[in-house]
Length: 445
Image 1 (cartoon, rainbow, N blue to C red):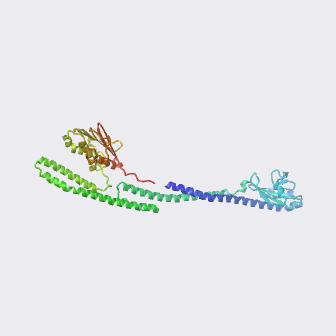
Image 2 (image 1 turned 180 degrees about the horizontal axis):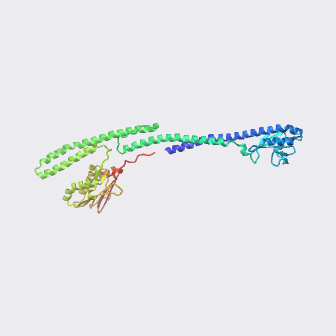
Image 3 (image 1 turned 45 degrees about the vertical axis):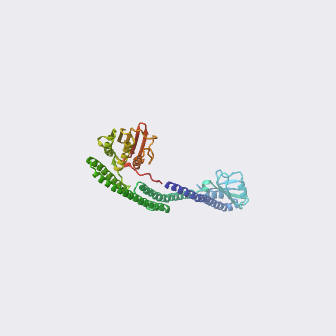
């Protein structure tokens, strides 16, 4: 926008100045020519007046030569006298007879005039009346340089004024463009912060009325989104809180069991369920602008240890590969979300593959940064070799397990890949580095 505004201002200013300065330049040229012609006419008239009496008395030669020599000089128009016998005084080789031109013949009729020959320049001819032997003619010759002398300085002044006006226009346009672009960029940065989850971001109304209007509407939109998300979080927290009652009933039922081992096992499951409900409540009330992180390797080891007893009951062979030395593998995802995604993937294997089917969990740090989580099994694969869509399941479940994993990766600006074949299923979640996670791109100017 700023560059376009500068180009538009430069083009407009140049056109206006061209329309104004070109006529002024031509007028200056014409004025210089008229001034030089007037001076040459005055010179010719003075010479004619000075040598007129001498030509009338017949002593014209000596007097004419002195008079003509007195008005000729360096860088001055050439003044010459054409006598009645066509002898020319005042030019190189004077007193030589020259061919008689139509202009001289016309001047000898008593007319003084100015004309421009084809060779360029301008000639001023003034007749000398009262000559004894006929009419003589005073001729002043102006070259092109003498005719338009003195025009260079006014032209340079006009050019300087034009350049100055163009620069002034560009400066004003640049300031205006900087104001417009700055306001637009600040508005875009506010939109970027809102897109990144910072619902406290607000735009400052500035710039032209249109941008101030957009800033006001953006602030209203941000406030409305904040209200809606707050209401949704509270509703989710309330719904999760309502689960406490049936969970408490389950705990009481577990305590009434006669088998102590069975009672402890069920009580442990109820405790895990209570912790899950508490996690849902905390997650629902957590601000979106938090910057969470978790150790992917530690979460993978913990969840595999949790599911190991059930896998052994189903005669499944399992494996967990993490970086050596239990080195942390940080990813920009909360640990509870990461655990939920891994639980969904492992739960799919346990629920939708035949007992005895092996599965494997692999965590590795990527060389370019970030991390990768892979869950593989040797089951029959997807029915049509592609992962089902959200809410779709061929096994009678909700069809949300894979979608939970997909959202976990994509919300962190990562990638989700699921491939199936006759040899099994491979699901890969790729996460970006924690320090380079960025918000979705905003608009530009």
